[in-house]
Length: 178
Image (tube, rainbow, N blue to C red; front, side, top):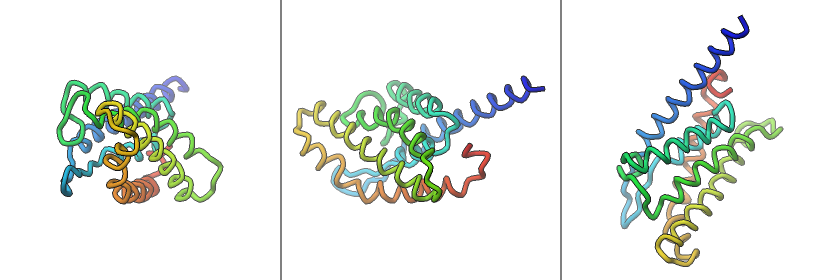
């Protein structure tokens, strides 16, 4: 009986991870153009939701790692892109920040909104750093120029993504968040 329960939990976890990966691939492709070279995608929103809801930190690494690998060959990145582009560093950062989101969301802070918000803000800063650093190296920019191009215009949108992710996760049934 215990073995059946363990197998059932494993199947549920794998299914949840597969659904999260599929959602990231589908949602990640779309971006909203807002002007001169500014396109807002929903990749990061989905990464926040994944990092806050995975069952183990390995699951977050697996989901975002598979997304990274799939996107090297199939156009699932923002704007229906594939392969290594100047913004590929942000995709790399997703693999780094999902376990950080997972662990920070386990902090002993009673207020779940505060706990999840802290996890998302810290992860966002790390995402910005990795993405801007890769962009600077890829395009031979200095880091300041990379931050001005790839980070500053997106800050208000990413704050909105944090708010949406925290609200969505807080409204999910507990069974989906555990």
